[in-house]
Length: 360
Image: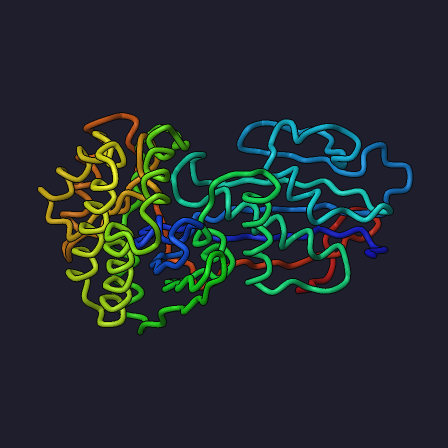
């Protein structure tokens, strides 16, 4: 147990360009997924000290929502109330009885951006809470814990790719050999390829939060009835493999084509998975020489789209200007490729509350 007041910090990236998504699910049974971990990351900070006379053991500060409130163990109430995912994660990991913790959570990515932000928040929160007790979880264990919280504790539909990307970062090729168990292969490329990919990628928020809908339930029902050998699922798996090979080769045109084919495979699952707003952005991107586009996540209304631009920086800037002028809700979110996944570190506090020393 921590005897000295300290601050625990953790960060985790979000993900874009998830080619092969939908195949990392229970009904697919096996899957191939390509994705890229990027910043803006999510941040968790825990101010922890001996409880002494503190009135509340755990205070949760969800900064993006302006919510700050006491969190109680579930056995003291009947349900997770305000932010179920965060509260369930705190229950899952626990806070030792003798400690008082103030937990602050923040993300620069808009809520409902379809970039796996909720999984990244859970991964970062688990990583930070893991510092409160002896023993350390591996990145893989953190990812699986985050997945269990969503699926088993909250009963939500969730694939496994978002949690794995948040835990590992980087450019990933994920092979799910039996749901939910998977092997993560990080794609290591020379710096010029990394830098060029980073320069060419754009993340466009469509201005509306994404949430699961009746359309997704219809798609899931159709896919679960068809079984893991469904040609539509295999079409998606194929684009993940093509994306992996394109990045290894430094072939941006091939990567762009894989992104386009994947988006059309999403559209084939249900036309509403590629929204009219996404199609607006696709047409602008096409007119400005973009090589590819991928509707992030499962698709549908709201959310975001990843664009892969051509070689010209000027055309990229003109494209972004045209997108934001088309609809005031459309927003370019600057991104940087994340070489790291979950990162956790601590600072001790002296008697005056100043950070002293550094522990990782």
